[in-house]
Amino acid sequence: MKDLIDILELSTDDINGLIKTALDIIENPAKYSEKCKGKKIATLFYEPSTRTRLSFESAMLELGGSVIGFSQASSSSASKGESVADTVRVVSCFADVIAMRHPKEGAPYVAAKYASIPVINAGDGGHNHPTQTLADLLTIYREKGRLDNLTVGFCGDLKYGRTVHSLISALSRYEGIKIALISPDELKVPNYVKEDVLEKNNMPYEETRSLEETMPNLDILYMTRVQQERFSDENEYLRLRDSYILNPEKLKNAKADMCILHPLPRVNEISVAVDDDPRACYFKQVLNGKYMRMALILKLLAEKEAGRAQPLKEEGDLIRGEIKCQNPMCITTIEQELEHVFRLVDKEKGIYRCIYCDSEAKR
Image 1 (cartoon, rainbow, N blue to C red):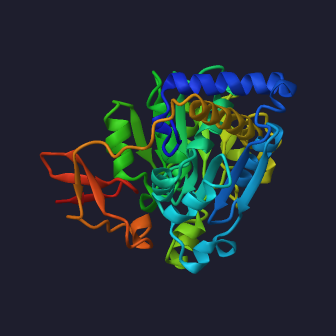
Image 2: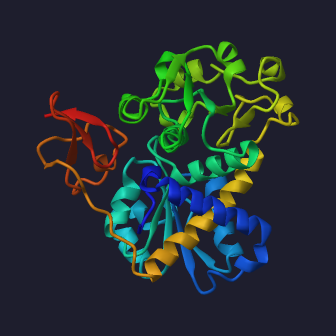
């Protein structure tokens, strides 16, 4: 494995191995303090981030490495029109691994095709966020002692919530997982997540608008904020932003050992009065994210040094140039020279998905 673009690129053995390494880092930090001496990570963040960017940077520093990069597109040559492909070719000359966040879906996929060093997807639009999922999985494992036989509720913005999409995909690998999808109709989880992940893997799930009715059944409650930056209509955002607010009153019927997660930042969807509840694990999540990113950096660099890293391949029944992606958030909308490539997912219905952003199209 050369890169990490989608959580499904990791097998359960890979995930278990990363968790094992992270737990060892927690127990024996001095053992890892110079593992990346002489190595550099480039954090290429085209949109604002606090936790993820600082988590990657602190992860590399605690491994004995160093950090270069930028924290906004305006401070990079992207402001002059430089493509993602050219940027990562250049950065490959300076660093050993790249962590990229980009508002356009599929940008890290493009980066992985052209970079000569490992690329880690640190979030692409509303699409994927695999390293947040690794933080989520380590938190669940440390709090519950397992990753199977759990009922997990996702609440809030399930349409644009990339952390939701990635965690559902990861949990599809484990036995006995039941999913509750709690959202307003306008923010339901995308069809490709339901069809390609939940239904394809026969995962029991329900869609509901009621957090209160679902609460007593949950082992994990994953809260999300309604993301203003994903809305083109501010009035629509204002109408939906307060759809769900978790407070102590709503937790009265929850299990005593339920685990409350949130990828952060929060706005008002979790009352600060919940912070002292022993079930609140969202700040533990942040710390666990650093440990899992340390483990991931070590794994990708080891794979590259051992010559086992395989470059990204476009697999499946593909068509090129015959369909254009209509998703306004796809990387193809700003990088006009990118070839439009779609993968066949349903032969009978003639349905294809964009290889960059997973949006559906018919031939």
